[in-house]
Amino acid sequence: MGDAGDCVKQEKKVVFVTVGTTLFNALVRAVDTNGVKQELLRKGYTHLVIQMGRGSYNPTKCNGEEGSLAVDYFTFSPSIADHLRSASLVISHAGSGSIFETLQLGKPLIVVVNEDLMDNHQSELAEELAERKHLYCAHPQTLHQTISDMNVDSLLPYPSGDATPVAKLINTFLGFPDD
Amino acid sequence: MTIASLFTPSIITITVSVVLIAITRVFYILCQSGKPLYPSKSPKPLSTLIVLGSGGHTAEMINVLNVLLLKDRFCPRFYVAAGTDNMSLQKAHLLEENVFNLNEGPQVVLCNGPGTCVPLCVIAFLFKVVGVRWSSVFYVESIARVRKLSLSGLLLYKLRIADQFFVQWPQLQRKYPRAHYVGCLM
Picture (cartoon, rainbow over the protein chains, first blue to last red):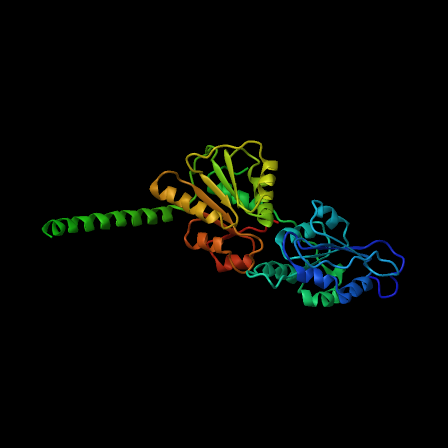
């Protein structure tokens, strides 16, 4: 990744932030801080696109002149998949749908755990996948540190799951012959 | 007084025997549940109830259905979705062309987590106890559950209502030994 200073004229590198259908102001606020934006710039990213969902906190838009990070946001979109595909880095809430959609596209991913949720079982999945080096797991307050410490090339690709063994056991249980 | 004292023992006897029969029946069903069905060579297609949850849950279920429905073994099929969820049924419609009526209870119940599946599975279990319809309940715990089962999963596991119970992480299988772990769906 590029070091500080060599990111003046270069290709477009988009960071896509998604909260899905959840309410996650803390994440939107975190990516809108100068600390996080400076880290992203330092890492060579040029654009920040935020899907903010039902949140009430509106980030500050910026057209990215004079070497600053271009920032844009929207609430919902039917084409989340397109945004994921065009991103160089995805910062997502901890929902399993978003996590696996991103991993299956092979995109570097930082999952930010929402500490305001009552039943916070979702952090289990993010922590397990982080332990297996498929993604980075962060909290809103530690996001800038995670970005600064991360090395996206060290992440391991996620092998796609396979429902065949489950289907096989179900078929056997019900007495259907093996194929 | 005398009439009451005459009848009381028989009422107690009847109540006790009914309760005993019911308990015996429940235990019999619990013993039979979890055992593989019809070891015949070419079983008929089975009517199937599929309980859909939200977002991630539905994606996991669709992955199972994509493999399971390759042959005409699970039909007719009935879909139920949680009330708040409008995307899941749309996704199911992408898979299905026909909608049927469910009139005598399904023979197979497939579910993977939303709270709505618990009452449906309990009803399926009661159908077995009463002898209306024998069914097999398959429960796949969500991949998001790594260290602990969801409440729905825990209930169906502990009450032994699920005939086959799948988890998607090996550490969870070690904690719940009657569960199957055969890899991830996602």
